Amino acid sequence: LGINWLLFLTFLAGCAGVAWTGAAFKPGEWYKSLAKPLWTPGNWVFPVVWFVLYILMSYAAMRVAQLPESGQALALFTVQTAFAALWTPMFFGKRRLFGGLIVVVILWLAVAATTLEFMRLDQTAGLLMVPYVIWATLAALLNLQVWLMNMTGPRGEK
Amino acid sequence: LGINWLLFLTFLAGCAGVAWTGAAFKPGEWYKSLAKPLWTPGNWVFPVVWFVLYILMSYAAMRVAQLPESGQALALFTVQTAFAALWTPMFFGKRRLFGGLIVVVILWLAVAATTLEFMRLDQTAGLLMVPYVIWATLAALLNLQVWLMNMTGPRGEK
Image (tube, rainbow over all chains, first blue to last red; front, side, top):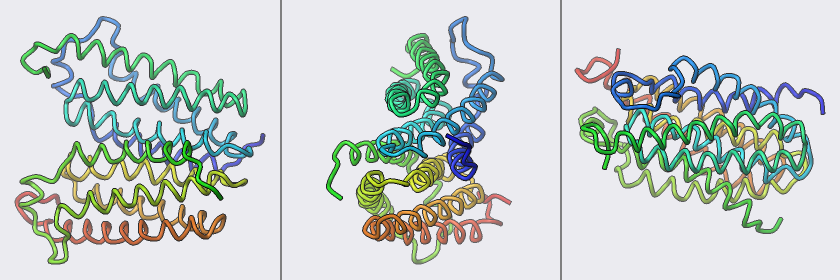
């Protein structure tokens, strides 16, 4: 499977839309004031990791999109795109710790299902999605723990 | 092309992620206070129209996803998903009238390109996207006019 630049850049354009939510809704004083687990990554880690993941997932989707029978795999890729775009406004915009948790759990399911479908069609594409599965797992665990640690606080949600 | 329920419901799940941004970022007092053109639809129109569009676009994508060579069309569908999810948080969340305009112009381009690709692969799918093109055009014009009418106001952006 060769490089199809038009496909790659189209998927990357979709990722740019998702990235834009991250640029618009940044962690600020509110996030700083939340209780967080010790293993919470520094703020700078998030855009760096996402940048790498956008490249990997766009390349993986580019490969899959060149294969026959890839409709279901790309439909799942659309679902993870929508929920990845939703998480940041929900968490940093609306400051809903539990709402963010629901979204990131759905995101995790969508990423896992996309990865399995990619793997079935093209092993390389599937493997390129594995870092995203790991990151989505960490993000879900972090959101869960932040929700639990701030449930009773003055800024937390009940 | 028959109905493939799994494909249809997967695309609809992506739309649900987009719809969630609309549910989370509602027009409130701020939007009410903006100067708006006379032809601005009532608030109730937006969720009704979007609901219909989600059904139509999911059905169209379901048809296209069953065809060979549909990779580029579905990649474009991913782009419109991302920018549709971005618009509401940008406009109603960040209250950026000009930022929203940029997003809705990119959204319009993505919807138009998706429709052309769908049309090329399956005329029915293309026609099912036409209401979305019309709606995106209206949304872009409304955002443009709201931006122009509120540039110099106390709550407007320069």
